[in-house]
Every structure is written in structure tokens, then in C-alpha cells.
Image (cartoon, rainbow, N blue to C red; front, top):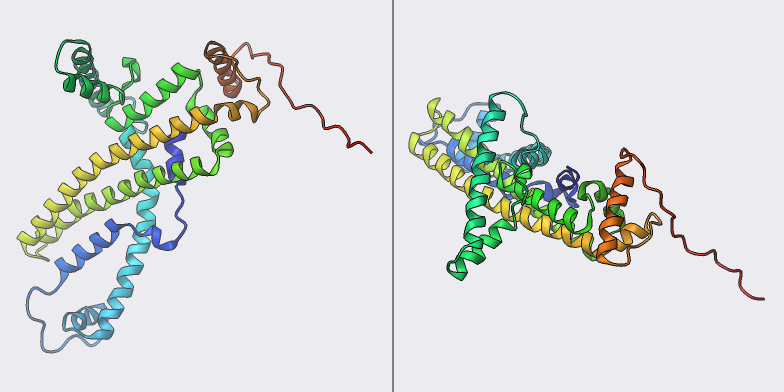
Length: 322
């Protein structure tokens, strides 16, 4: 999906932006777990990284500085890898990268069925007689779910994208993903800043989610290999898992804000979207649905028959009077 892939274009204008807070936390946990848990020997090895670590454990300033530089380099390099994984992670959480055949696909189908049943319960709560707070909560949650069962995704993130695309298609007959490349070119500066900010929030939480998951997964083997005591490793793994769960919920909230920003940008710039390709503007909401259908077919370039439209171009400028 275009709007999901566009998340990866969230700008990192400074090299420090490449290092998320999760990278620092991960390096700090590893350093603390690998620190000497016993008093260091009287003499450190003569050379090598082990000697540097031993000197650092003894409080040697140069060794501490060297390890600090190595930690920053390691965090920067690892952050580049995590940044590359953040986009695919959002795709995975949205359900667009899941297999369509095999045992995993069957698990996905069961998850979709559960979400469809949950949506029907929310619909009954919204339409039934009950407390106003329960009705309002049901409406709020249904706003993030597509009305059509066939569009239901296996995850909250996927439902948020699908619901936004369904709303835009139903209101304007515009396909968000087809319009997205053109919309990116015509957005004004305030809308562009809002889109970049919302994109950065989602990507930042996705990166930190990866770091938290790495902490929960990478620390237990250190204890099994008898490199660190069991209780600090278990505590770090539990903390990483807890942070990952919280970040997963925060990522869903960030995606909700991102989809709202995309929807608002399209709603505000739809006239400019038509005008950018000299497409005639609709005169009413009824005309807009017809115009949007033809415009989407024109962008798709595979629908038959192709729409026949007379483009609206500004009149040629007259030469100045002499």
C-alpha cells in the first residue's frame, strides 16, 4: 500500500536522528549485563578488546572513552539496520506482508474472523439501547474498523488503514493509494509538516519496538550461556517484553493519527489534486462521486472503457497592451 510505504520516507535530517532511544537503551542493558560481576583481576590482559573492557571496569578514563566511542558506533550501525526493518514491520503489523497460503494464512483467517465477530458486537452495542458512554466508545472503535467484512485486517493497524481508505473511497470515490504519489507533490508546507511528524511518530515507535523485542530475545541466551547471572537477565527480558507491549499499543495510536492526517490532507487538497492534472472540478457532492470514480479509473490506467474527459486548462495569457 502506498500510504504504508510512504511511512519509510519520514525524514531523518540529522545523523543523531538515526539513533533512537531504544538503541541507547539496548546498548546500556548489554553493557550493564556484561560488566564484571566480580572484582577484576589485579592485572588486565596485555592487549585486545578484553583488556580495554577490563580497564574500563577498573575505571581507566581512556578505556571508558574508547568503549563509549565503540558504543556510539555500534548503536549508529545497528540503528541503520533497525531503520531498514521499521517499514517492513509496519507492513507486517498491517497484515499486507502476511502469506496468503499455508498454515500461517489459516491462522490469519481465524484472526480475521475473530475481529469480524468483535466488530459485529461493537455494532450491536452502538445500535442497541445502552449507556451513552458505551455507545460513544463503540462508535469510536468502529471508526477505526472498515464497515465491509471483506476489508477487515488481522490487526488493529491494518484495520486503521483499511477504514481510512474505505471512508475516502465512499465519500469521494478516490483511491488513496493511487492518489498518494500525486498528493505528496501538491501538499502545502503545513500539511507536509503534519504528515512528516505523524510519519516520524510511527517510525520512531516501530524502531523502539524492534529494540525492545531484541532486548527480550537476546538477553536470555546470555544467562543460558552463563555469561551473566540469571536474575538480571530475567529482569531485563521481562522489562523488554513489557516495553514492547506498550510500544505496540502506542504504535497503533500513532497509525491512527497518521491515517487521520492523510485523510485530512486529501480532504483539503482534493480540488488541487484535480487541478494539478487539469481535471474538471465537481460542482456538488453528487458530482464529486462521479468525478472521483472517473479520476480513479484514469489513475489506475487499466479500467475499460477509459473515461473521456475534457480537461480544464487556464486560458492563454494575453500579451500586455502597449
